[in-house]
Length: 134
Image (cartoon, rainbow, N blue to C red; front, side, top):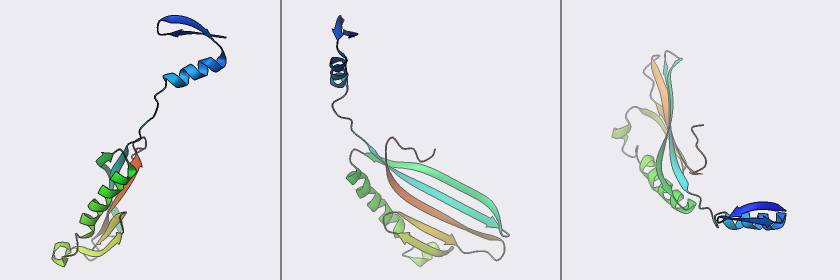
């Protein structure tokens, strides 16, 4: 038997009754939220040696359902994917790769032996309990 205080009154419960009481007191359902994260990574070289490396995660939005998160992810990816459709906008980009609805990857034209680098953008929907920065 277990002694429990329930709504201000002391009760004696069997172990089974105590478990049922705990389940009853727990939330009926737990909603999971989904978060759209964007990871921006850049890597710069000077004279063939790493000069600067950067990795930054940013939250773009949150949704109750993963389908909502994925829908927004596809829309944002479409904007990034069109970034070099006009070559005049990407004069400093040597290579532009698209991974459908996941990310875009850019490699900069190198300035002789001096500068080279890349800038990558990755989009991912994760449960709100997951923080990719850790």
